[in-house]
Length: 380
Image (cartoon, rainbow, N blue to C red; front, side, top):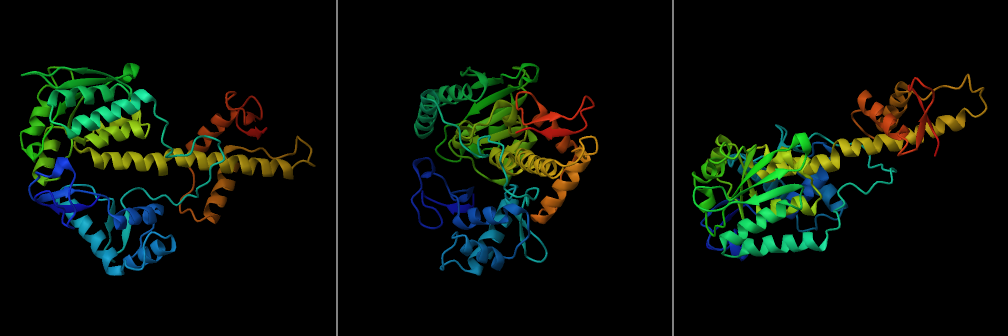
């Protein structure tokens, strides 16, 4: 999201804003997605540093930029976005080095997009039930309305579809509600403070205090402030961090359900004081480019390399045939990854985990070579 200056219900580029923003005074806000910012995130996803010219060239090749976009457009948009994000104490999606090259502000991902696991594609959104869709419609309607009680009820109800048991409290001297994660001994409680504001009330310095003041009395683990929109003023973010509160927009919370984020994965976002969108960005990046992808790539390559080795060794005496151990797998997989342009190889614990997965009877893609469980034989 890019920073825009808005005033009187009109954005800096002259667009009429949606209803929740028409009374917002002039201030820096994280506003609508910028095509240049979004394109840069996609282009820089491999972790490589690029100049504005290089980003422009790649973007045009991929059809992300048309001929009206210039190198100056790219450089100005990206550099000003970083400056304003840092000025608001937000985490920018990418950084710029001393040579004026831009790089994604996440661990680099230059592993190939290989996946023959048969599992649903990473990033695939779950199919929502009618009840879940109705809960989303309700909370969006409440967010655009003027009834704070309905907004509190709708927010609490939405939590029940993300893996929580939620309770709406409400009233004077009590929290708006709380939600308990259904995770057995890993259960945690989120204290919920709702602000159905049509101006910058949520940016007041006492809003984070309100969101945190019932934490101890209700045995809360984390505190959240949720509103139709969240201001990005640096003083407001400082207060959020001081009082240990994460600030969510209605759409941030809806996104958990729409993207299939469970209560366990959401915990890291609730635990991060500040603007929830920043922690959500890290969460969604990890789901697409982190450990889930690494394990899929490793399973794909390990099965392929094991099959190739087994085919090559068909004429050997079984007693003389080499075993496909973790060390052999690491050597073969890392060579393949390097040939495909990866700058870093796999870890031993990752290969060991993939071996156990493949040899699990419920998966059935491989069996252990013998009782020592030091090598596998691919059987499918």
